Length: 183
Image (cartoon, rainbow, N blue to C red):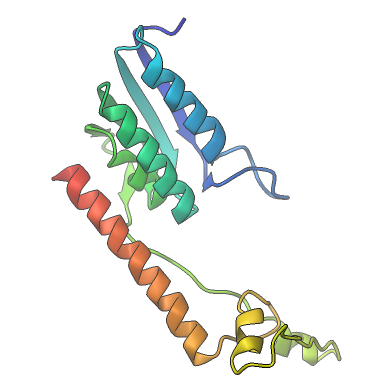
């Protein structure tokens, strides 16, 4: 049985799942979702405090958790208590709560989206290491689409524009979430 008011720590980077080579547990979608759904169903829990201390992370994971917090807030009071940092995705989670409390020293905000990739192909070519992308289709643009995440090749202009369009769409969604959450 939970106490009538429960504090849920959301600490670390936000990701779809844990387990990367440099990964600490952080805030991951499945366990947090499971906890929030249990709290929503438990009638003995009258309110939930989310203690958020996060620099952000995955935009998709942040949005999925935003939905879970928003659903919980429809049934119970949800308060976001911000620790040292609630930036980017950490702030994204906070705006789903109905009340947000920050400390004077909390670093918060940062409504932005960052994207890109590191291209190592030209540097490796200096040492005689060359990579070739083999597209699965002979149609124009297939090689660029096949290599869009490759660290060996730069983006062509259409791919770069698609990535920028995705980033703009994520940014607009983030702004909408903040605007609605903070009225």
